[in-house]
Image (cartoon, rainbow, N blue to C red):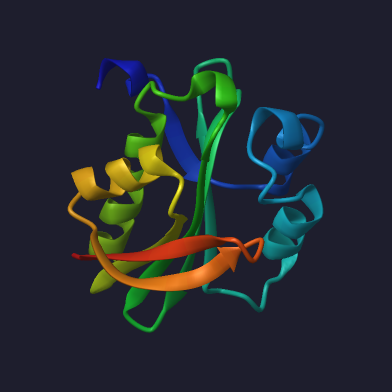
Length: 153
């Protein structure tokens, strides 16, 4: 993956949120707010949440992923790539990182939900052998269905 050879993934820090706070809504997707991310990182009681950032050689955050671990499962809450850095393999790289994280910590599966209209994300997950295991009707904004997908690791 030549497009991601200079990308480094590390645990998200408060300083990372401060770097993206001014551009989060326009450069990424509007799913996460700065306050939600800060709350997640500052909550020391919540040992089950893990956030990771992908940075380029200029130390710019080009993507991030949030996961929740539940018993023997990793639940991907979101994978986000900066809009101007999409289609470069960063999403795949973050997904591979999470698959490795799940294997390293002996989790049995990875589960996620994806908007039925997010074809590029669905294709990404299928490429990594995620299988559709369910559907949540009108999950997004009471209109779009959520496709539940799982990968056994």
